[in-house]
Length: 294
Image 1 (cartoon, rainbow, N blue to C red):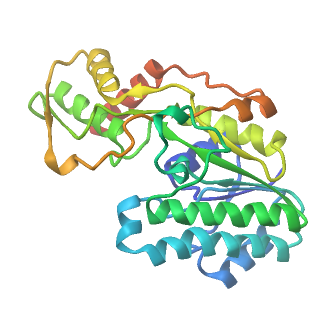
Image 2 (cartoon, rainbow, N blue to C red):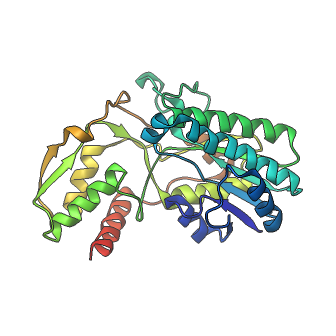
């Protein structure tokens, strides 16, 4: 199987490449460039596609919503048209986001795929629109499309733009004597649903093979983790003692105090369940930062 992978250089893309050797788009190719994308897809002639590429930084989507829509919605349309013009007859996996649900009342947790989508930022809006586009194409084009809504990822190689990866970096800097034993944090009394990136990619692999055409699947652990507890676990694993200081610049109004989702649909159709324990994810993250900081 020849797999076309968009977003190959990102955090998740690198894990997809390791699990499913594929052909990335040529370096520097912009999804907004219809002609270049069409030529690249025609040259690759893939049997399957994993579409990860996106503008996924929420603050940037507020600063420039048009650019976010151009990449995430029109970029997806360009890819679909390029696949169609190349005679593609395989399966495509579209990677959306759990952020598309917006604010979910606690009574509705764990969130399931039939929950209304109420996106609250331009990034999430662009993903709702692109997912709807993919559903339409799954029904009217000559190829099949499966859509996923992944929740929070964790694992080695993640950028310190993300809270747990940032805490792991700070903890390791303290252990190596490079920073005072004070951790700078934002709001750590919220809960989130975290899945190890390697489990996420295994879900993508299984869905590409067994997912229903036009099907939409949450990819999540089904477990609710308090950020404060994960921070304590990082400190324990690293053998570090530190005080925790709330940094006002890291505080974002967290409307969603609790979040957990259900992976029942994914399990029903593929047999998938998360396998990597949180302790291993955190230890691997610490080890990765230790290597990077040496």
